[in-house]
Length: 304
Image (cartoon, rainbow, N blue to C red; front, top):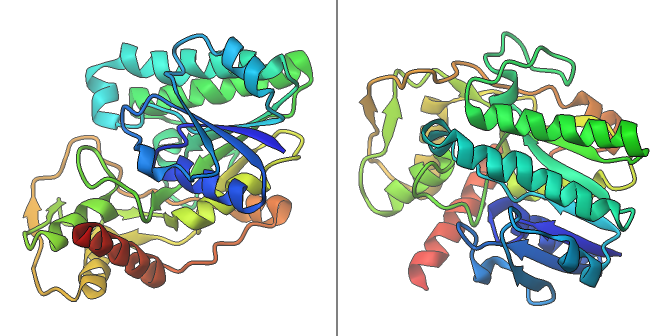
């Protein structure tokens, strides 16, 4: 199969590329390298340095994809709040460009969306039909991207799929900027400095390992549309997570507690039962093992 992975030099995208290459698929990566890294891209994949806000038709005509995994995004919530127009240009207009270019070749699009930023505060594990209450421009732009996929499915009879990821963590996640909390905690521990926990640390998230996410993403190929939560269905508090990170790192450094950040969700957890039933997706990597694998990767980067 000929596949395009947008954002394929980034954290999650590069793992999706690895999964496709392992299947002997022909993979092209489209990435602006604004946050992605060349070294993340598998040798057997072809990297095209381009921003998805630019015209994509000629490049798609050259590659002639049968499937498109659309993971390129502006994923920094803080940037989205400060620059909502830039966020929308990437996450909405960029997604439309991908959809239009893919339509010329009858390629199915698998779209990476977000769970926590779309559902808002959870009173129970969120199902795909739970109320949608995004609290940031980022969540809103991702929801708009989903709506465009659904509209294309209705208008053109396509079978594009939306995947709502939980809190993804694992190797290649950058600990700088608005990164995932696992990367931030392990980066701090590797530097022998205190990590910061905002508030009392009782807020919970659904942490899912990037290798499992990549496997779920490729398993969505061939589905006739739909929306699927990709998570574990298990909640872990920030305090519990930090303790597990300390254990993986073999560290005794205590975290520092700072003031609660305004607008932060207290509870975010996904119900992954639809993905289990339809995609046959079950997370294989537990949090302990996933954190250890991530710590080992962090250490390997320091040695290099």
